Amino acid sequence: MTNPVYLALDLPRVDAARAIAEKVKGHIGGIKLGLEFFCAHGHHGVHELAQVGLPIFLDLKLHDIPNTVAGAMQAIHVLEPRIVTVHAAGGRAMMEDAKAAAGENTKVVAVTMLTSLDERDLARTGVSGSAHDQVLRLADLAQDAGLDGIVCSGHEVGEVHRRWKHGFFVVPGLRPAGSAVGDQKRVVTPRAARDAGASVLVIGRPISKAEDPLAAARAIEETL
Ligand SMILES: O=C(O)c1cc(=O)[nH]c(=O)n1[C@@H]1O[C@H](COP(=O)(O)O)[C@@H](O)[C@H]1O
Image (tube, rainbow, N blue to C red; front, side, top):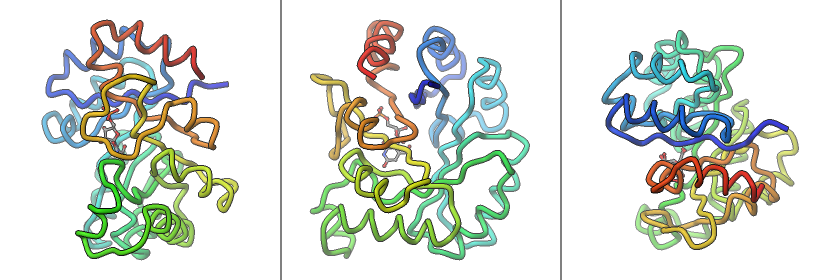
């Protein structure tokens, strides 16, 4: 079985990000590069990290009008990302156009409700109801739009998996037992998320900020 862990490298420097990736590469399945890294280093940074030899997940969380998002998807085509994120809140037409513009081997997944939010935060954005209902609603929209899957927390992935049998489910907000939660609010352990049906486990700081990233990656791998 391929390792489901994608290491989130939310770091400002290419050399530091590459050094950590090289160190742990035998114990992860891919590398996730997000907004911080891409805004700082763009295509050049992605090419550098691709040298590590693992699949690249480009987490850009695109959210704009359909024409603009489709253009952005075309612009990153040459990077051949394995996974790309868009926001489900961008709507059905935006997601359809994003998928149509993506490369054949790129999975396009929709972020539903960020794992850094809880129901009080959701209510403040004007959405009433539970996190669970919000995630299921946006998952249905993403499925209707023809996307490959969604991003959600480990609290919802089990239910989404039951409704969308062949979906591709990315789960961040993961914390090994006892590790610092930080800005995440809806967290579970990597093992719980995998057991509930996650296809990809996104893990950042528990590895990247660990005193010994290799030992941290190994310890997580052993729990899976
Ligand atoms: O799309 C994501 O990957 C994502 C969605 C979400 O709801 N929550 C979330 O934390 N993420 C990303 O997952 C990573 C989590 O990092 P850590 O909290 O350091 O493990 C970050 O790179 C976030 O940008």
